[in-house]
Amino acid sequence: MDLTQGTGKEKNARAKKMMLWFGIVSLLMGFAGWTSAYIVSSSREDWIKDLALPSSFLGSTIVIILSSITYILAKKAIKQDKVKQCTNWLLLTLGLGIAFIILQFNGFSQMVANGYYFTGPTSNIKMSYVFLIAAVHIVHVVAGIISLLVVIANHLRNKYSSKEMLGLELGATFWHFLDILWVYLILFMYFVN
Image (tube, rainbow, N blue to C red):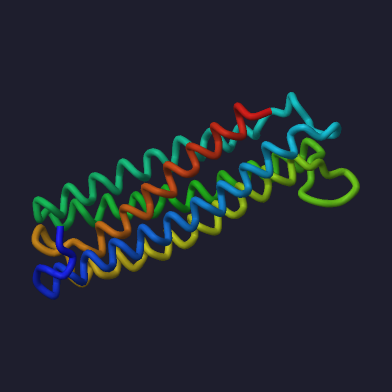
């Protein structure tokens, strides 16, 4: 495929998609570093082996998976030019994204209630990693919510249709990445003791 071929609009779309994927790969490298450090640190004597993750993390996992499904349904609706239906799915995705963050903070509260802190004399290296990994993911979900708000604003200004949906596609790709990343992280923290 010759990337210099095509209309200006096609080249612009390819460039935006490529930039998004470069960003996603760089984020993956950061999380790969943290999970690698988690694995290396698991050989420490003070590593807690039988720690249960907060139940809110399971709930937030279900919520973020549902939010990806609603984003897919929004994209499907706009492909069929069902504008109102797309609006409803996008707003539901936004609500689920906010619910994910609330559940994550509830998970942090559960960890603190169990006596686990991010830092300080009662902290533990494993819990510090759990706090760090979840908190950094939350920051990225906030970025995803900002991108979703931009998508919603553009959608309400009738910028998307079955023939023009690049912004919605880019937002959905980033959102699905955040979903898959969290599922990986929760499984990683659950199985790597």
